[in-house]
Image (cartoon, rainbow, N blue to C red; front, side, top):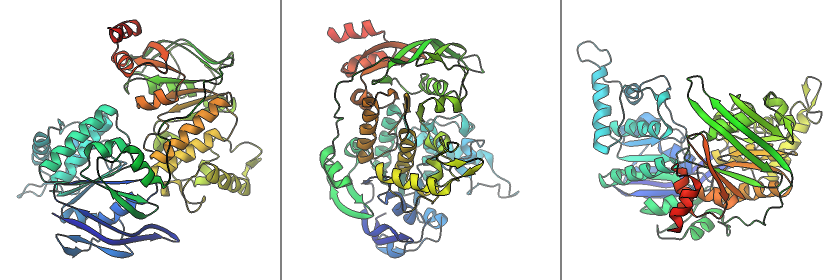
Length: 509
């Protein structure tokens, strides 16, 4: 099936999200749609999927114009979409999620045919090697497995064109590799894939064709063998520093000290075991490790969302183990959570309100029990400009922003006040190359003002680029603390549980 978008224009008030966009996708082609957050990529695909009506232009399938009045029409025409934020019901099984809305029924009785739903999942899973249990509950699956459920759901409805909207934004590196292999298999079997992303390395690894969108317009096409620097320049419209430019640290006194910190969860599973760490003022300590080795729990303990089972936490020499979250924030702790939707924003609040979530009780933004609306709006306008948050109106709900701009709101909120300690967990997850450059520079700037920074990232390149020292975690323990220039091979061995000394010996051999 050949897909064409011709002159697609979509407006939201005065904002032109898509400006006369042309796009062609050939059968069996992986066509990457590359652009910054807020460039209009997802809006364009929502038009294609029938979620939005275009203001101008048309969609053509095999040369014939079609009109979709909703996603059901798009699905019937052979178009499937896996959204950046999955459309799954946590308490449903895999089979129930795949069949939802298209439930197979018994011919005689009209009731749902559960066996047929299971068979559907098994057939598609077996065909592409997805290894999904039809009886498993969605809430018990990893993020990568949930994404495979979404793909199975689309394929079970005979999708000939599959739209993947920022599919790697919430995946680990291993899960990303698995998805790339799945994409190649699908394309080889004849399925066309529109791959929406801003990750340059992934585009170069998997795309057959690349279209670049900037501020709602197509600015050009690029070959997969284009360099990352060339693609970044097309995306942003200027040269982008792909490497972090920073001076050597000037560390001061110890700001954060953890001693014998352990955490056992409600199921009596030891998640953290005897963690000993010190982070000095004016340095970035990176925590490397495959996701799921206790990093999330450690950051939540630092903020006060979880209580350690044993051990101490000191901030500037004072124990804060028993301090509630609010007090830790007031004492100068900033937190960028790994899941911005769940832990970083209040979706029903405006952008302006989200920018003062950690300061709304201060005299600057409130008087007694009343918020000062003018001060909140002025703060939002200032931070919008300072942190380059792309939006039309700070009073709009934060859910109207792209994922990357939501992340900038969180970064702006946390870094717009004086901090002693910044805990940044996956700070650039789901963020485009221009925003990554900006956030990296802000983290380094925060370090240079004397803030102690704990950086947790599943991106090893990010850890090495930003960190002054690197602590490697494996199964809830610190395997070792090494300089930032430590080779990837040594870090990789340590991330697999090899002790630091042994990993360095193997590297030397």
